[in-house]
Image (cartoon, rainbow, N blue to C red; front, top):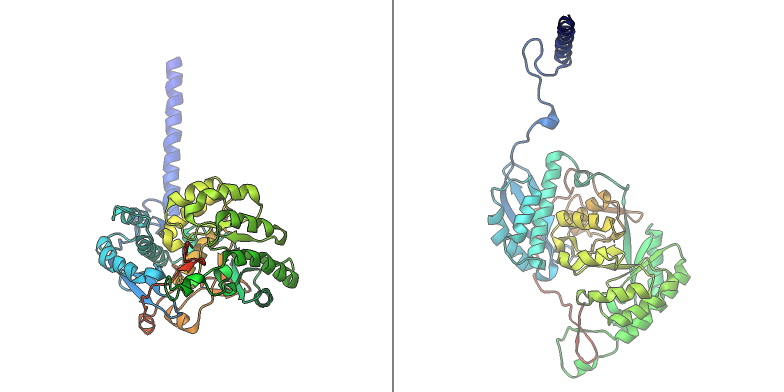
Length: 454
């Protein structure tokens, strides 16, 4: 009797289950899931469709100098007609060497590879020469990497920052460059930038190291060194910087944020003592106090002052920035994005910094192409721990060669919201401003002729 009751219950449950399945199937058919009543399959939703494979057809370097410094841009052409990407590979002091690396090595390495596999292409290119983390090959790799992100954005129909996570801010806050022969001239220049809407200004007297304050050096009288080698009087420079900050604060007030770049040109203990004297003027940050060879001095600097520090312009390798960031030895990571290999590693650096309260301040001088500046901006939009962005203005020739370049308004940088990085290149216009390939002269000496390391 119990068995019969159990069988009846099971039969009833099975019937209800089958009825439910049938009803659900019917509803799914009405809703367009699976096969409809006519046996026709519903179209695959767009997000589930596989995109057609696109491969790299060619990689080439375009060298141009519309604003003076040598610029090197990588152009990656694909198997899809009309689809290409651009990336910045500018190492202006050794531009010809980077061009060779791109045209003679990266082209053959990349042809036939799937443009979608950015991480794999980056990692394989990074180790393809066995020796790595040098400025020439890293710049070539950076140009390739940025160009692939440009292509991916174009394929997705989105600006690159959307692929990196979307906007974390409405625009990119930038700093300008105030300069002058005297503290009073510098204060005038800072006021000019404030009138243009900038809230941050980096101040230098006569360029890096206050070279205009130095007298005729003994090494030149003795006929030692090169004719164009510069002379820096380190003591005079160290005394000039607090006076410069005092004059600018007195004239421009406390609202403007002031920055300064030591450019690694003095001895570590001298830099520490000078930075301590600047505390009363509340610098936004002091940049590159020590050369990479003197990285261990940061621990002493941290114990000596509360002034925020930016570092990293000369870094090439993760071995140089990883541990100092983990130990919070500086406040802003200031790597040259093309020097470290492009957007792919820069995003990893930014993510590392987020966990240790290290903010970004990517190096953005005039010898970065508008493509490179756009890459900075797209990263800056997407990361939480953005700090500040170095900015430059573009002349008419630069805008002719690079249509779609980022714009500056009220101290903020904007991109044009086009898919990819948003910057194109007019190759005919670029050819009218050929690169000169002359090496830059970074030779600065002490009074006796000893080279100062930047």
